[in-house]
Length: 339
Ligand code: SF4
Ligand SMILES: [Zn+2]
Image: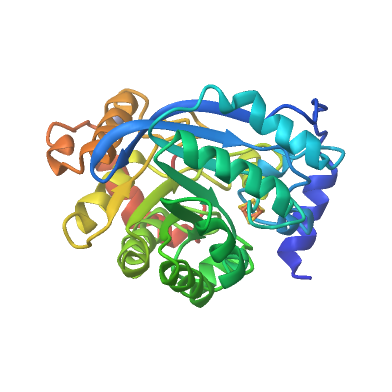
């Protein structure tokens, strides 16, 4: 076990997990997404499962999703009840299925439950996006699922194309080549891949985080028709949370994600998206406080239109501060200069 996993296990032990009925989904909400370039409704379901197996071994340094998992592993009937409790609210558009782990890990979702959910979703919606770690994208899982769903995508938390950052900063425990293999396996079965990237995991400076996202988008694009850039936010019970508490971590500037998108726009064949969750909060991506909502709206607008003019009117006096951070933060070994 790596040192980071031991640190993560220690942090996880201190957390209290809230008790919930095993028959209720952890969360369900409706938002917007693009389907073949057209804005559509998007339904997101987060199942309560026994949790991500990697998270139970400590897991990733920024991930608090493990606390969404059930305190007692749900039965097959419980998992089906979770789905049935939200199924009536789903319609045409896109459905995203998350488990705060891997939908294709049979320890979380047994095959009979997977079959029930996918068969029903194929009847009521247009596309199903399924979150999983790459090791569960196999010929077996793709054949059995694709037989049930016409339009399917696997969503993989690649986080970065840089193995050093993924292992030593995120503690994700897989390599870029594992993501490539998963994407190629999916493609061979007519399944597309969505890559989730993570901007500014701990221990790296703002400038390194920016450069890493530009390179990661370019590296992932040949394997992922959709790339979604998550901006690291400070989730409770994580190593990022401990660093934040000690003033050793600051979430990314919104200027930085806009710069990333400007640098990669038009250079890949992929749709590039970002949903700046918790934008403007100290625990979320933010600028100076005055311009945060304008930036968040522009980033959301770009994601839905892929039109770079969404950023035309963005300006604020905090730009020069952000530029100084890019210039100087490398000299502080990643410790933030400004919060
Ligand atoms: S980020 Fe994904 S792989 Fe990592 S611990 Fe969380 S759910 Fe598991
Ligand atoms: Zn500002």
